[in-house]
Image (tube, rainbow, N blue to C red; front, side, top):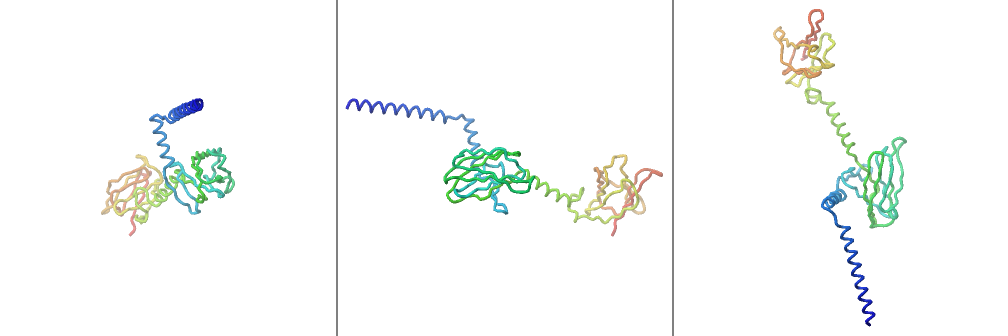
Length: 277
């Protein structure tokens, strides 16, 4: 009985020492500095963030690239298709759990503009791992989760640079319909002017917004080359106030009859402006 008691006490003592050593090691492993805690907290925010998720016209679930770490939900006996940007070349695919998750490549599209697809398959439900995909353009950090029945059949990405490009295209279309100088849509302007005469700087167009008159020249004019504008009123040529900005002459009111003059004598060039109607 005494020997058994001694063995029992020794076992308890050794077990206590083991627990103490394990607990101490665990505490040391979990002891993070303030900076490390902040860094992991910020990383958690990015990993757990909801972000922008939408559905494309082809049923694809679209994540905004880089905003948060996207979570792709897959299911056993089903495949998840993660499509990357057309023309993007995949260099490496790294998966945290390579035993229970399989990732296979596929391609679609014409040669020279093919899209790489990553076909993801989990072996069972209730799994979670991460995947890093490096390409010729960017790096994807994706969270993979498996569910018994729910899954995302198709997944893709929207890219900030594409959003910016589309915005630039929209702005360009708007500007194309907005006449320089006036800053208003072309349909709100009056182009009903007639030009007479010949000059190397002959205006390409003249228009008014009902308040000011805009005279556009084919090329930027230097001070010495710029013509002088005279408004004809009561049979007299009168100099009026105007501003010359690069290729645009802006007159501060509506004109009906005017003349642009440069040079003197035989070198003089003159263009007459008349408003119709």
